[in-house]
Length: 363
Length: 128
Image 1 (cartoon, each protein chain N blue to C red):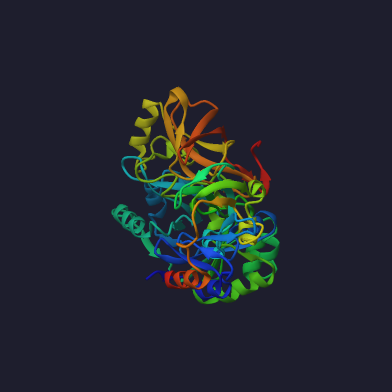
Image 2 (cartoon, each protein chain N blue to C red; image 1 turned 60 degrees about the vertical axis):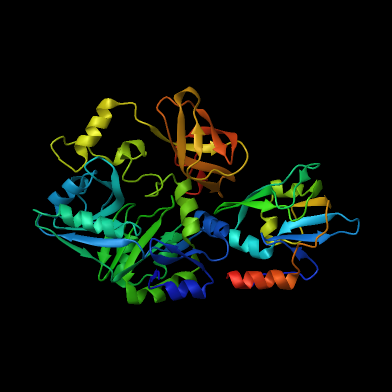
């Protein structure tokens, strides 16, 4: 039996096709995934992301703990509310999960991890907390809504009230703020501007109704996946996992090797990989041949060898098929992908494919 | 609720077949099938002139979600394909029994092995 978010009844009411995702019953779409995708690129959409796990990390050792736990460095966070994207690595340098950390104060950080990895993440985080003055508290009492799109800020602000509205209105990109029991971050997973809003579970359905009343379109996990793929954002479990390094997943920019004395988990493994060189490249692919790229297709890279698509699909904004792929070092700018038994030409492009409603790659 | 016209015959694998006045048969996928697949983004039809074995994979419909094979509900020679689908695969979603047809066959056998609308609808109801 899948778990239900506080917005479950709203999804059913709106005619959603519900599917199991990471143990949660979630909306795949509300009729048309394509229309929901376009609504987010051109106007505003709302996603229920209450299945994601919010963990508050508090205590005098919170900062030191996270500097040990995460491959990115929370010491970069100086402005209260500022968010940081990071991987949490195992000792071999594989990715346990990717997550967002909001800095609230030196002894209070809020971390948001994936739904499908909740149990192992919490176990890992607790195990690593030994020896630190830190308390981890899962916030199952909060629902989370992502309002995304060029008109998302305006439409969300029109239905937020009082101190929450004031806090949200003042946010710069990639910053969040608490307002009473609510928390608003100017973050997202679509390549568009918008808010991610944490709200006490009991208040979520009424807030959802107000957003929809303001013309924000409900969007499901299907659109969320095509939007994040166009934005060149990785999906845990698909584009990276415990077996691969962030350095081979396009996430080298999130690994803070400076200062050299910070001993984060996985550091030694990554340093060895770097020294050894010959790392596989993580690239975008634009299909020039026929069909649709999907995950786990073979990428034929000529003399460089073979790679694999990690995420693939049809890009509604570009009207073409795109993928993220891991290919051997030395792969040229043109490859072939084995699409259902037939090699089809594709070219390498640098993600993102789409950002703020506009194509970033040449078709 | 999906639509299942009474004048068509149906295969277990969710194709529909309509007999035309010239004896050829038109093939598409059912409303139920397009609903399950979601928005279509790519359709690969067989080549005109190709000989199809009954039950053989002969076309591919790909949605935002996944790729799915289409099987020949009867054997025969392909005499026409719906060229419009190359640019407008969404016709299969919006009009699965009309503008969204896939291909037309000169059938090599009869349609005796196919279901009528009631039998197909009963199968769909049982699956869901």
